[in-house]
Amino acid sequence: MKRLPQLTSLVAVVALSVSLAYWAMQLFKAPQRPINPPPVPVVQDASVEAGAALFGGQVSVAAAASNYQLKGVVAAANGRGSVAIISTDGKPSVALPAGAEVAPGVTVQEVQPRFVLLQEGGVTKRIELVADDKALALPASLPSPMPAPAPAPSLVPPPMPVENQQAPVTSAPAAPVTAVPAPVTR
Image 1: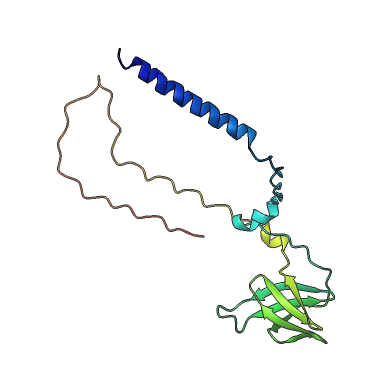
Image 2: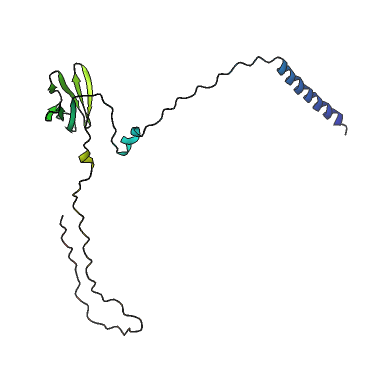
């Protein structure tokens, strides 16, 4: 009990110090600066076509109107010897290697598996491979699949009903039976 007045004095001094510190901070604080809100991030909508190539779909490319159509490509593994099959102004298709002249002033700059770069008057044009709807559709006259061959008849007789069962008859072992698979025709 002798220390109770000292403990009370200590608690009172701590409370007074906290109160003085609080009010000093309130009186001498700096004015609050205006805070700008964070910039709103620009969210771009993801298009379905952007992910189509990831899952094997065809990406539709908006290209400038051109009188050249890429009908096919024979691409070599090393890039040399690749040939582009190009149709100009609705004329019959012509196979052209890189460096060949398609029309006066128009040359094949590069041949890739899905596109060709043409150089016309110093301007490079990218011509995409034309998607052939006939090649994408399944042919109507697919051969019907072969029916499964009928199972070979069982050489073992079915079990007899319980009430008509007789004592088993033992006999000499039979010769092994080998099944010959039916020939597969396509």
